[in-house]
Image (cartoon, rainbow, N blue to C red; front, side, top):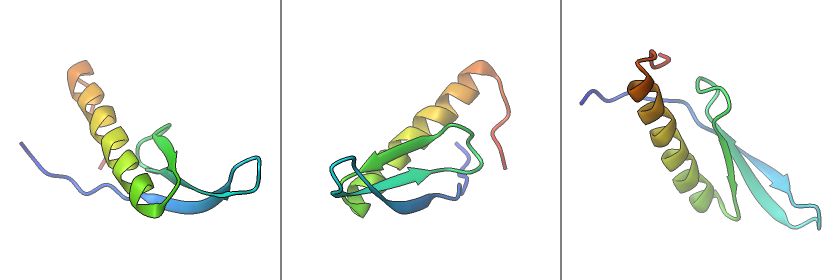
Length: 66
């Protein structure tokens, strides 16, 4: 299996009640977004989301963005 590096952006965000949250997305994977209560949780969540996204691309026979 080939490895790829996909850029991830994690930004501080706020819940409606004002408490701190984190939003993450992969700019190259349109629509691949997630969030978490801590940077570590958010990073784990975006890794999982990106893996699932790429798996879906492979299954559909679509190209993986570079």
